Length: 354
Image (cartoon, rainbow, N blue to C red; front, side, top):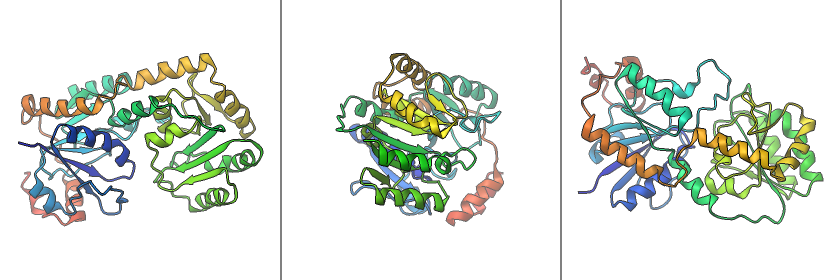
């Protein structure tokens, strides 16, 4: 009998994270469907199944629901699995990294490597209502495949990708520099903004630049997938989590005012230093590349293209050995009321939790 799985999509960057997992589910002969929250872009392909209502999900009755975001609908059937939307790089430099916030929604966390597994194992002991499995990140499967494909650009290609966080985005500060380099250097540019980037004035300036410079492309969807990353020879960023993903392709990164700089980055704090840093990155210094590989290994320990397979095996293990045997999750009554109200699910179902 085929197993049924559900993808819970609340943010646009979920698509490239979930598609490698979809490939593995279908390869195993099982079924998968997508539920997309209202307001989230619907970027499904023709062959992908879309469940358009809560009732459709209930009728579908999946054995597991996967979410790359911070929450999930508790009333959906199946094991609730957190896949994460990036790596714990603490881009804001906070005392506590939001990557490790436990909100009481999930039964399982699928961690990626040393920097995520050890802290979550401690949280598992502390709370006891979820299990932690180190599987690697599903999106890394696609990155591994792209890494094995050689890209030959006629001219150097720079990908500029910035975080959406207002206090640390480099977009307002790097515009004039990027504009100048696009006109002076024999480089091609791809500009991609996070789907949550909200400053319309800044977006407009970069889009206009792409219209006036033939060597600049503005990537409209904002979804930085493995294929897009592989097209570039160097990444220019700030503190976006895409930095780790790009380094998995064994390529260098230049950052502007990164909040947690290290030897794996060519970080600058002056816009006048961006050009020389990009030139150095394009030369791929041996010492820098060694630091990049060590940094990636700490975050992602499973660059073998089999992370999605391990995720499904972990779900099986949880169902066999732990489902119904862990501590009770927190009530979260207010949050659960809000979610039910949002989608029109019966509010009385929350009261039954008492």
